[in-house]
Image 1 (tube, rainbow, N blue to C red):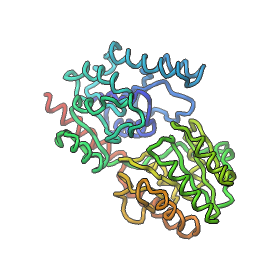
Image 2 (cartoon, helix red, strand yellow):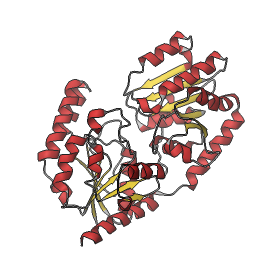
Image 3 (cartoon, one colour):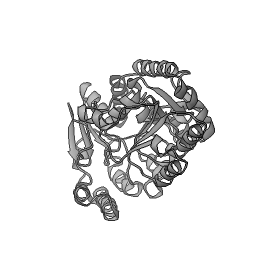
Image 4 (tube, rainbow, N blue to C red):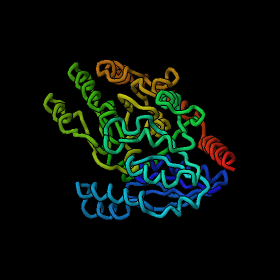
Length: 381
């Protein structure tokens, strides 16, 4: 069985790599089609093929001139042309086309309509609100794209219920459990680049976007600092929002030395180093279906504080300390016991690690995914 796996922007490279390897281990012939890899990408295709089919010209411009307006315009135009007029041969060569992420809905619609009825189309809906209302142009028309797929894969009941509320036929929705992931291990240089904590350290890592509630986290931390609690907060990742006002608020309150930032596209090793040196990892998300960041952190055995949005609200009791989504005072109260007690941090960290070890494997996910493919191919035959 030949599978064309699409993630044009390589939005979830670690997920793609894990799934493609597992599918290959089950005998599938898999090709991942994405953009050219960057220095910050850590995946190394093993057992499957990798084709940098998308954004070749705009990625070359990015390497020379950065991510300014010209880069974004060229990127959108290049992707639109690829979807509208680019060769479909790499996709039609496969038995099934499986799309992980749809980076620009108006352009994606052109590609999917060219493929419709020619190959079974599968889409993993990582979040029912694909862009969390943060990227109106990218997401405009996303719901209509879902009707072009023969099967939709989700990772939890939250996403399934959201799709059903949007009128999706339940028979087209297939649930496969999302296994834990492991980022590339930190090396000596990565560990040296991240300072050792001298007080309990909270860590927020990954892309920084409005729906992830960093503003709520800052508000919660300010209230605890003002109350005399001694800890520090690290923000590590690429901002896709203006974080300057948040940093300025901390500095104005006199706690600038308690906030450490490592902003930008970070390698997996660098992120792994941040997790290794943190005491508590925080997820103050306003809304989410499933979180790859959370699943990447479990094996570190660190205490977790989350909102109760999406998958977080469905975690077994004791895996994480939870607070009401969108409620900064509640998040502060959830943080407080962990800040004050090393023993409580260790207890929750052990539970998080055990939870990760008990979850399903990528082999399980690959088998379930192949069964979806076989169902579609049998229906067509």
